[in-house]
Length: 205
Image 1 (cartoon, one colour):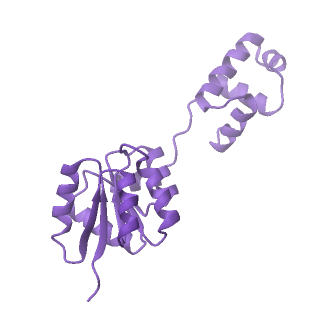
Image 2 (image 1 turned 135 degrees about the vertical axis):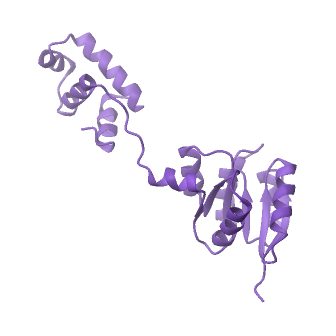
Image 3 (image 1 turned 180 degrees about the horizontal axis):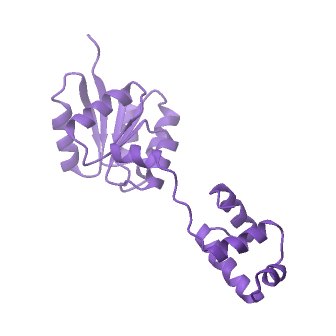
């Protein structure tokens, strides 16, 4: 008989852990071997018992879920990590997966989806909520630049000075500088060279 999947629950809300424990223990192939209300508690438990999979929230007091994922991957590389959280921003998802999580679920997932994800993640397979799959498969939004801003940025990419750009577009040099400020703000770029690089990356030029 196959040994059950040993799961460590990590969430700072006791009621969430209670609910998860009740759902998981109803399945013979899953056993909850510990619970933690913080990443620090989770790491202490991992030091004292064998765990196949850590089911963790992202936002908790202390070092947080992303740091926990990094720590587990460093010290217990055979232990899989599955995120179960309410946070679904692109940054949260990207950071968790980059840190080494095998899956990412949202807390509105059904019990069946959580059980299936635990089984998949324990085998090293990816497991995502449908919303997360959609985010992962969607291209990042392109920054919105006006037609004039694109003209200015194209000329910057060609190596033109602000004076040369103003002459070519029949606008004042001060107006060119204003356009550049708006461009750098929209592209989150510290200078004109970085703005050009970001624009190429987003295929704006």
